[in-house]
Length: 254
Image (cartoon, rainbow, N blue to C red):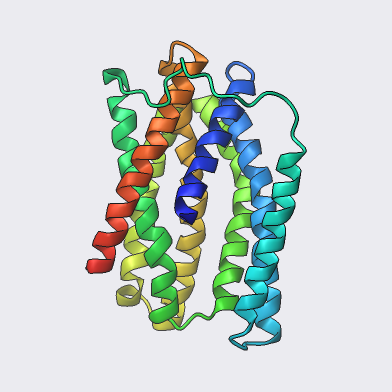
């Protein structure tokens, strides 16, 4: 349920951002939006670091979820304050499949699979194989959030400047190296150094995942109108989420 909510948020944010972005500056707009969202992410990780650094009692989990509930309640109050019409236009398509978006649908499948594997088994390796505790993992997440905060606008501007295709190809090539060193670092380096290499690669994975913004620009470039862009991105997010479910089950079975 949490993952589904996260995917819905991503689709909505991307669509709204592209809808309000100036022509030719979609990447920059997505970069700034993503950068701002990292502020809240960083704040959450800092809370976890503080709590688990002060004490390691199991009861702390209740405190953390209570804080999360309060923050969710504040978000609810802010949402209730929104004014304006939010009625659904039943004439507009919510899902859109077209041959010209075949590559985009396939990319979303691979993005979803890759993200789920790394999101689930990245921390899994650090915790079980290298003995990282909750504070250490949260610190790593916080560093990733800080890196993404600064890198996101830069990646957005790069997408606008060199084009989405170049960014997507570079993202894939770098990702191959990241995954290789993450999985085989303990065969290539001493244990302590391998742990540092994995942490660095985890942060690099978070940064290069920002390149997925390029796929949204790709859709906008192919679309004939904003409604088609919105429907296609929503469909892509759904495909991403669907493959995520099966990859998670398959990874757990392995």
